[in-house]
Image (tube, rainbow, N blue to C red; front, side, top):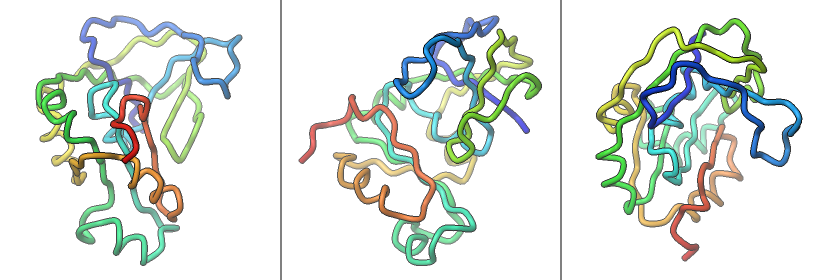
Amino acid sequence: MRLFHVSEDGNIDIFNPRIPKREDLDKSVGLVWAIDEKHLPNFLTPRDCPRVTYYADEHTSKHDKEVFFTSPEIQHVVIIESKWFGTMKNTHLYLYEFAPEGFEVQDEIAGYYISRVAQKPIEKYIVNDLFEALLKRNVELRIIKNLWGISDKIKTTTLNWSICRMGYAQPRL
């Protein structure tokens, strides 16, 4: 298993645990966050870019595969708003890879892993073209005007989904 931390900061030598901002997590324990390789496409966007992402697995219905994917070869979709196109085109990301020892799964469907101790990356990769990085991973990228409609629809499916940074999304239509 490969684990990564994605950042717009290319100068991180060590990841120290930080108190989580999420209200559903214990605020007394600092964490280092990582994402597994399968779910990495969900984070190949600028940090604050609102996005709806989803992928199919063995539990996904035939109906949902037919409705939410453009072809059987595609199993993962990332959707962003058109106002973020330029930002995405001009953003460089750094993928810090960690050894999996010392991490435990926090959310298997989302691919989140946590460590309670400082972690030193074993490798750092730069991603200069986010569009190309998604396409190389056989991810379909969709660019739409407003995310709220698909955000509402995807929650009612048998797909595995992630909805991120909606506070930066266009207002509901």
